[in-house]
Length: 479
Length: 85
Image (cartoon, rainbow over all chains, first blue to last red; front, side, top):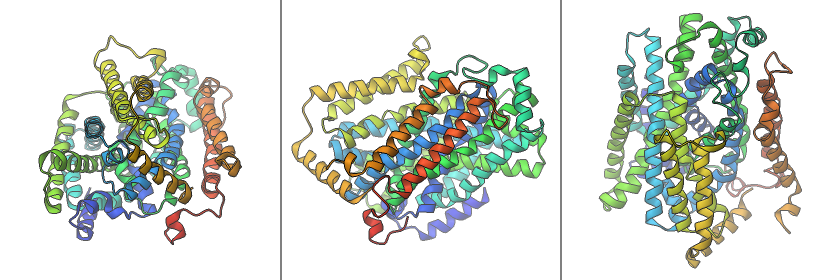
């Protein structure tokens, strides 16, 4: 935890007191930094702890992560590069700036902003919970997870406060390396305790064959969930404000061409979680908090120093995502809510301070949510991602369909979010065909978007002409 | 000239990528969802996905190398001006 604090201090010395520097690092983030910052933000508690718990309790459904990682990379090339282009051309800082360029609607901007802020909170919550679980297990229960969560909260706030996106990016390079190797090594290390990979699955085949195929031991994680997670997870993460900010911050467009390969290749790290979760079924059945299966196994079966190092990787996953989320939520609040509705005349210095106070407040809300809203990390995470994933519809609509209208975008988002909330909070209402509520909501979002766009008046002619011109420039200048 | 005829590699690449995703997801998951044949000591749902992952990584790398079908000589605007990837 000392390393990020030191990096935050150094980054603070390099930063400038402007919103553009604090939020998108002056649009000059180098490729190595961008890849690691995206990967570390992408690998969160959801991936490092939650994935183990899913393999441990739900069967192989989380293995669809291999495909969703590749899809995530493809999204970077297909959508991210265009978002970067519009961000640069029209000087965008927050996601709603992009929508303002394409739809010019304050109502739509506000809806997008609220969706992003509200649905990022539970995702931030699971980072704090995950980090706190790790500290609790590592201290053998000496530091209860509620206190551990507070320690986490303090470290994150201090260094994001100090250094803006530059601090976040630097620490993410350190975390990214630790995570990739930590995840793989942990898997093979614990599998060796039952005789290696082949022996592990031979034993499971005898004792728990239901854990080796869909729909898993509980019978609830079938092909519907496999496919839903494949779409919802990358779309939701990609549309989260923390990754959106990173798209604007990129210096060279060529990086977007490479992202599908880099992110797809990095997917193999999940082999570690898969092995830990499956070995846990044999060695440690019935762990009361399944999200703790990885640290529980490591501290019981690995040397203490090794377990501590790998769990530092887990803490890294949680922290790097949490810091990016808090940072981007503060950017969204400052620019889209404070500057638009609270005080239009704030100077740059004051805005940076507003951003810092927002960091404090959002993190505190997430901390209290982690105490009062229980659940598996992946389950809570999927609700959060399902919310932000709804934003992909007006985004792709803006980029690819000239007939998209503002009314269509608003109707689609309201229908998508409405259906998602209904299915999440009213247990009697179920999603059909075994799909996750997020995917079902997304389908209805698309239907509403298309239907309403077809029956409402087109966007302003001068706006469409400006967008057409930008599109032509993009096709001429970029691959 | 349409993008399709101007850059045939681009079309081929995307068709292969879509097929790859279909095999990993729908309807492919119904073929993958079995224990046998065990490969690399793992049930087929795990090992079959790893094989597809290798193919997809190769496609992604070819995509990068060929500027996603626009050819090796194509340069994005900033890179043409001396930016770094």
